[in-house]
Length: 131
Image 1 (cartoon, rainbow, N blue to C red):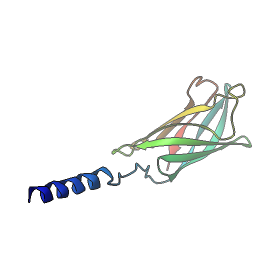
Image 2: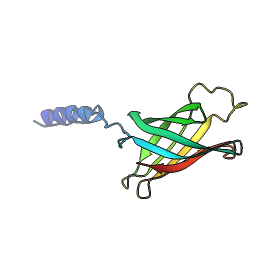
Image 3: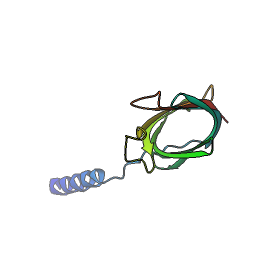
């Protein structure tokens, strides 16, 4: 009888080891934003979209002064609805032209969005409000 109890416990413990873990997913409504892009000390009016792409990934599409920039960002969504993320520009392999790493902060309560270059925020930065 004890032998059967050990077998049942063993099978149950193996089942627990291989149980599926729930993967994190950044779930939020896509953001449409308007604000200011600062590019090497010049200011432009900018429009951008920030949307989830599945899993913890998000993508940002920024347009200003006939320039389009796209970046992929790993995003964390907090219970308050605030977003935080880090990522890099798509297609940018050389930091000689622009620093490739970017960081975003979004405050859900004020709808304020901020993106900056991680190493040198004076090179490129956008600030604005989202809907």
